[in-house]
Amino acid sequence: MDTKLTFLLFLISPLLLSAQDNLWSLEKCLDYALEHSIEMQKGRISIEESDVNIKQAKAQWQPSLSFNTSHSINNNPYEGLTSYNGNYGLSAGWTVFNGFKRKYSIQQQKLQGEIETGNVALTKEEIKIAVLTDYIQVLYAIENLRTKQSSMEVAEADYNRNKQLFEAGAISKSDFSQIEAQYMNEKYQLVVAENDLIESKLNLKLLLRLDSNTEFDIISPSISEEEILKAIPSKEDIYQNTLNTRPEVQNAMLNEKMSELKIKSAKSGYYPSISLNAGVSTGHNSRADVNAGQQMKQNFGENIGLSLNYSIMDNRSRKSEVERAKLEQKSTQLQTEKIKDDLYKQIEAAYNDAIAAQMNYVSSVSNEKAAEASFNLTKEKFDLGIRNPYEMLNEKNALIKALQQTLQAKYTAILNIQILNIYQGLPIII
Image (cartoon, rainbow, N blue to C red; front, top):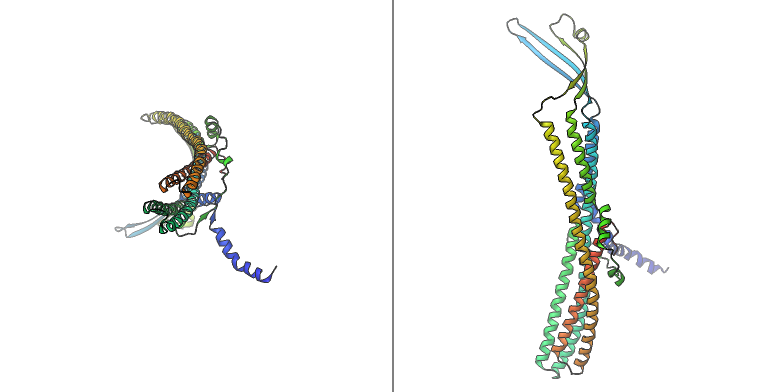
């Protein structure tokens, strides 16, 4: 390789790498958002807290062990004596049986851990939809700007040509004023499109939690007509797929299991509790005739005991707890049905929007072709002096409107198709 070319590549390679760092694909945006989202970070903390709660619930099977000591100084002014007392004790306790409450507590904490994992998964799906929506909005703004730039180039060429004709007296001031007004409107629409792109990029950067001054450009993928008009499964099939994949449905089922465990745990209150305890103790007193060491040995004592406790009358506490748990179970079951109903409505809306957007796209493409043919024909006649500027501008505005409708239908269809994929747990492909 030529030495100068090698040196040139060495100089520009950091610039190329920097430019690549500023280019964001949809996959890169999704990965970054999921990593840096505050809600995702909070969700991961909730999962860690669940792990701690599970460990604590399991630790209830272990015995407790404690050490205690007390010290006092006693003064008797009448006798003029001061004495010092020291006591020491080591005690242990273990709940042998408490009506299976520990068992159900561990199961509940494990279920809660699964629910927290489901909550994180649901947050992930919501972030995906938010990023996808903003990303497609940027894609739309980019393509819309390109359309406005092309339209502006044509308008500027027409303006310059007709300005020369006006100055030469070939066209009237009225005709030129209409062309000039259209040109100014094109400039204004271009500025609006530029601002829309800036705003859509800013929205996406804020969603990703990037600094607003960060250099940021997205990769604009080539989207074929086949992708826009791809066959969509029936909404009933989509719904059945979502029932097996959506985190909110899975969490609803877990909450039903949790309510069953709460009923069992409440019923455990009808069982007696059995506890085992043991301990050792000793002490010394400064007024004794023997030294502290001998006192500690002489006062050393041991104890062990087994206790059973059963509440015969508890002011209806146990029965009320069981009844509340059963009512909570019914409420949980109703909540599951509501979640499924809401999910079906969401799928139905996204499905209808996708189908409508596809139909609108087909119609818009056809309308765009017709508008383009009509505009070209009118422009030819205008160049020959058969059509006036007003007629040509009407045709051009109709073409611009048709292009705009096609763009909107295109990206609306892509967005809703990908949302349906997210609902079904399928990968996002753009």
